[in-house]
Length: 428
Image (cartoon, rainbow, N blue to C red):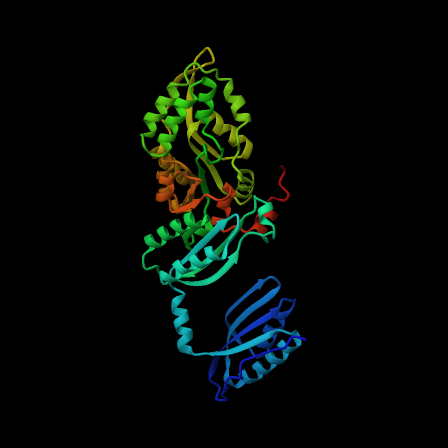
């Protein structure tokens, strides 16, 4: 039989003054514990000031802070002690002074942040170092919760596993920029991803998410694929890499690469589209976003033909990309039609779509990998660098590098339990 333990009974007065009592319950999780204990409090008309409960591997941890008349407190504690003995759980009582309570209430108005750590697996060192940075910045951890499902014991044999933990913290960082920088450096050192977001109303109601296409939604640069078919692959790749690293102007690099495609038969675009290597997690991500009412857009420095292919396949709402000019002979002319969708244009389109959808810019999300994505990443309410180039990771506020693009869902606060139920009935 499990012993029931408690702290020595606090000295209870009988003068009718109010008392604040914190009870902490722990033991094997079972049905009816919360109901049985709050029923006792209800009989004495106790007021619940705070309550929290967690279940870690079938082990219950329950805390209740309540206010009662001191003439009733002795009977309440006695009944609670007997009931927890019957339930075979441990109980601890603590008297909370009004000064302590008022200090705690005063903290509730302070800033709150959500810190999300994400990877193929989560290690003790990652949590320890993240917690150290939080503490060093003068913040207090209110709660820690797991967003992903139970981790398999042999995760090395299941390379597609995901692990995510979310911290809710309270307070004002001593230096927010340094905290962000420390997190980004730590994530690179220990091979995991981390997000720091202020817990505002906008974080809980994002409505528009805009994606880069090449090397984000797909695992290639389409212009490189076209160049291979045209026999100029090496020349175009060298220009592409230089542009993505931010070494040369995107518009100039775009013009030079498109010019090299002159004479390519337009029919190869269909062949390339049907064999595009899709990034891990795109299908899962899009199903959840669409079921949850998000508007989705592709804002790409690539080409409209391929953006529209993905739009039809995954039900995107908008596509803005570059249009290749095709001659009467069915071959590419080496020119383009309309304005180039570069970094500046992506930022403009993000703002335009927010206006069209009648939402605040803080409710937008942008995801991309290249230097030409930085303007929209910095403009969006949540900008996420995805498997990005070093220059982009250095400047981005959030980054995902260890798992697929469906990792975005965890930065939005989705839990696996919700994700699974939300897409279980969706057709493949």
